[in-house]
Image: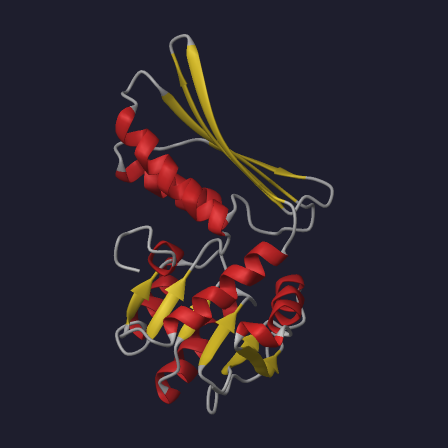
Length: 228
């Protein structure tokens, strides 16, 4: 069976390098067929899927190319504006799109556990998110922290405070705190290597090529919503 051919957008970045390294293992059934640096024209022809780990300002060109060539798209970029998010949703009407704030399997389990905990705890328990990343990470709060906050809001929490810390070379750490009378629960995920995100991105790429048009998350990819 021929490997799934990937166009990697943002190949020059840390995540791009990690994805390329993981995909180099012939046993994955995947191959990086072409690479695209940030700012380069995007051509989605003759590939099976596009993985984007570049920058939100590439969204419009990226979506246009995938629409034109009917190529599935996996987006791991965070920090999209409302307009860019709308553009992605429009693209998902014609091609399958995975939009993930975090490709880590563990983080997506954290999302599911956060939702379950929020369903159980009443209003006496305050919610708070603390996220820590390396000093060069530009967006704050992180896309993952924003996703956690959105989950908590969906469960009736209202606005949730997010503390962002930028220091050292920390790959990523997220803590969800439920603090109530006499007790406190903390759900913590620590990323120790970018390889976990690369493996998740490739898993999403392998999954999306068999899907119908629509907007999906890593929760769908991992079957955590019951329809993956």
